[in-house]
Length: 100
Image (cartoon, rainbow, N blue to C red):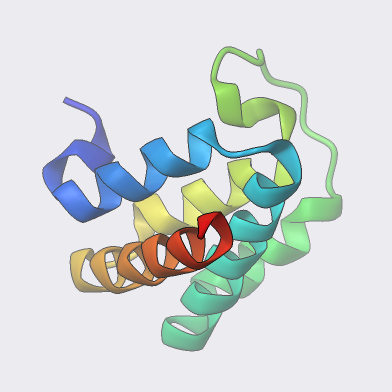
């Protein structure tokens, strides 16, 4: 089971991001990073700073081609479950507003 399958809201948010256009995916990733930074500054700031670092790793996941998505999902994965849910619900609201 994947980490985001544990909460249906998190799973739905990630699925909708995956189906979105590339620019909307990036906007969602930046929104996730900003939202997590507001809830738990220490971890999020370390990962946002790491955006400029170059790391080689196999690009096996759909998120690996977008550094913002990679970092946003890494932050979301490490966030407490209540933060994951709150941020995911906000992402779903954002995506619903964009798609209407």
